Image (tube, rainbow, N blue to C red):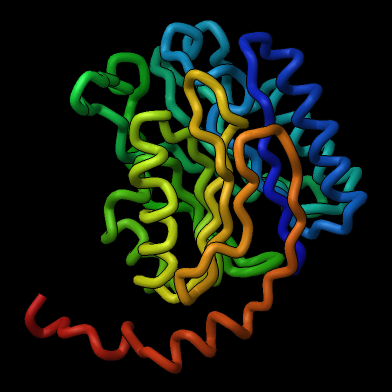
Length: 261
């Protein structure tokens, strides 16, 4: 399976972001990708002041672009995330479409980024409502679980996906320039190693609100791809037999002491 990481340079103009995302997806398909992942909040720069303005209902222009592009390219798309407006609330929502452009499902970010870190403060809950869903899991082109950004810090969240035998954890994200250098690579590698599966975090290109460094890690916790800071696309082949080999060599799932915890 060929996976595309689309590290988009996200700005404050929604129409421009949508057009550039569409172009990148089509470019990824031209490189032979079977599935592509976009960044968290790929429709608008990661600024809470812009989320409500840029929010839209589930079935709207972003939904339409992703569905049509998936159908045209015959490529599954994990649509990063967008600010979804529903019944007066805004959610941080990922939309997924199969290669025929059919809607697979949505995932609303469950763990919100409410932190005070040295001289850095951010309260995502002041604008975003937390989802009450479990990770979104689907089967094609490979067994994949979807969560968003801050979710990666909760090992039990990834463990839910491992228990469903996912081969890939897809994580649209936008780590800050404060936490990114310290924790981004460490968390992706740890969750890959913990759960013996591929983990792919895709972020906007580096900016005041994004660390960048979209990354794919192997089931053994090794970094396969790091896109650095600039906008770009990387298409990489994922061999799912590596997941089975890793889980057989160190059978974490079988050796868990579920009688104790």
